Image 1 (tube, rainbow, N blue to C red):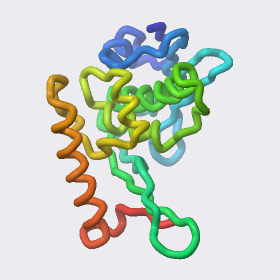
Image 2 (image 1 turned 90 degrees about the horizontal axis):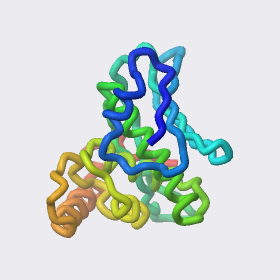
Image 3 (image 1 turned 180 degrees about the vertical axis):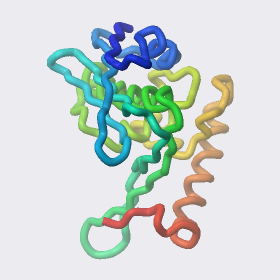
Image 4 (image 1 turned 60 degrees about the vertical axis):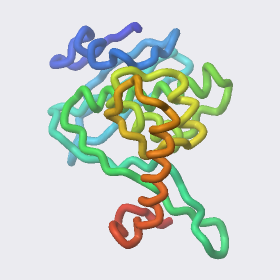
Length: 194
């Protein structure tokens, strides 16, 4: 993986170590840039398909921050087409977590376009893939296929790599169903209504 860093506190060797275990975007260079924010830190990254470049931005100065990540939508009953967004709140405590989450998200855009030949604008699928995998030690292409199918939206991200996929999927689907059913009564602010 070709990596360049323009952040003084994160040399290329450190970035390579942070991204170890994640799949490689073949033919693309990864560049880490500082994100100078005005009010609060946030996530920012992009994939430039023309230049074959993945740009990851790390907030400078880095302070722990939270972000709400939508990972799926559920059709709302009633007239017309309305959706309830299912989301999860994340707290990014280190630059490593920011780098891994943003890289997973942008790698999924790369995978959709370069490997599958599809439009790469599937933001929810990319967020779901990043949400499921940014804390895992080893991530494979099969994990991307699972994110595209929408399976395992509540998978235990700290699970060991040797764990049975079917067992974790059934456990995850039970947790997701119970979360969706009880979301209104437990945390009505966790489900966005559009």
